[in-house]
Length: 289
Image (cartoon, rainbow, N blue to C red; front, side, top):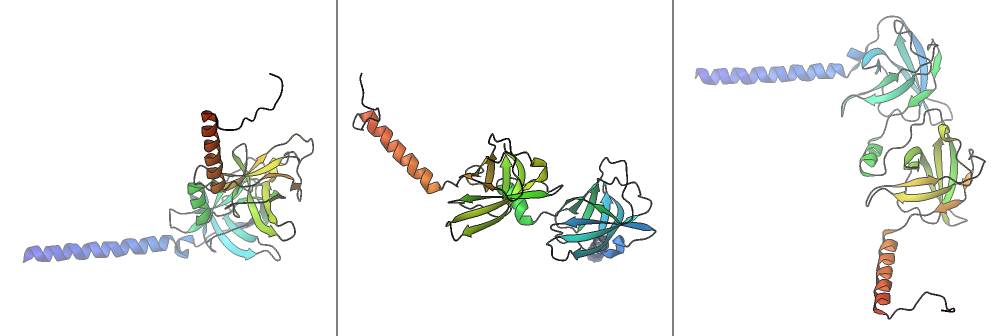
């Protein structure tokens, strides 16, 4: 009988401790922990996607809380979110060229803003603006990185847009990487059918850091591996002039369908077999021997 009582007491204690742990974890992801105290100064940062970031979410440097998100608003007439960050006064030496990045705590935790220090000698002041930001990454893009063509370039410093026409884009979709020499330099921002030319117009957003791409470069749609995702590869030309915002890439190579590859393989294999047997026609031009 006493053994049953001790077993019941142990079970009850385990349940109580479990509830206590759940309560503690809940308070760590709510405004109870994120409540702001003390003097602060405010800076703003703009993001293309804030995901599930909420007001009062922490602002951290190297994992240490230095402030909180004060407000999140949509800029009038733009698809950009303006996030105001309230930073504690004692952390008043954040370099002006620092980067604001939206992170997620763990796998399914809340999102917060992490500050990555720059190297500028001047510091952020009250009312300052952070020009370098990195938006949250949707789960679909993370899965695309794992299964598909890899990640896209960070949009630090803005981007410029160029277009290209393809007769066949395969499974290319918005968000797919744009690469040059295998490195991501941007992403596909829009894919639409052209009702006049009866082909597909692909708009690419290329990071401003890569503003020396010759304007006679070619764009080709490739596939990562055998069953990976598709992406646009930029093959540089030799023109002394560089691509500018709004330019069009004239030289393009459309996506190759799997059926076409199989057909080429079968045709080439059949032709090789016939030539080996002496029954095929010769491709050698007639002439003197």
